[in-house]
Image 1 (cartoon, helix red, strand yellow):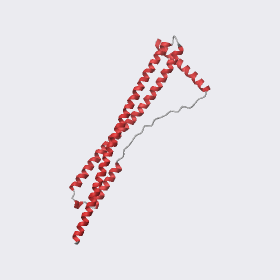
Image 2 (cartoon, rainbow, N blue to C red):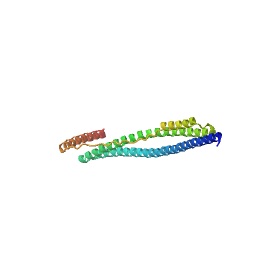
Image 3 (cartoon, one colour):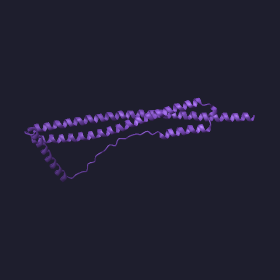
Image 4 (tube, rainbow, N blue to C red):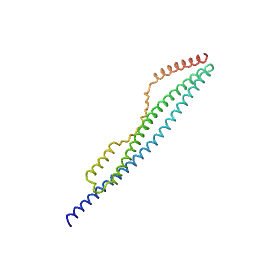
Length: 215
């Protein structure tokens, strides 16, 4: 085989290798883009679920607040005929207030997390558009370039662009931190004092309600 033929065969073999590697990177980028689209879609599903749960918490909080008002009305209606029943009504109204507050606070946490997810989704979609445009541009450059210009430098440039694309890409996932309250046990003596103090508070609140009703 002549020297020219040997050089030609070596060059063709090297070019085939470079073209194959570039085509492999193109496939890797395409798979990565598809995976990014899938993750963004999954995050949107989580966002929808989160928003529905936040709306449910808000509805429950409003219902508890309305129930508290009904118990206060019942307390005022029962005060003259049955003080014990009136005090129990006040106690239940307070319990509804506490439930409403807890639900509202949980709803705020859900709303904050939903806002973060919205920002993350917007940023991810923007980055996805940029990567898609860059991918299209790289394909166009590959199509317009001749095999003779596919040197080691161009191969390194493609690899460097791929590495930079992956290094800049990050998908953020937010997790909700649910706060669990733990109550410390109390002994019987302390419970007696607490019960007595709560009853005094209930009587004061009942008296306030009756005074407001008379005025």
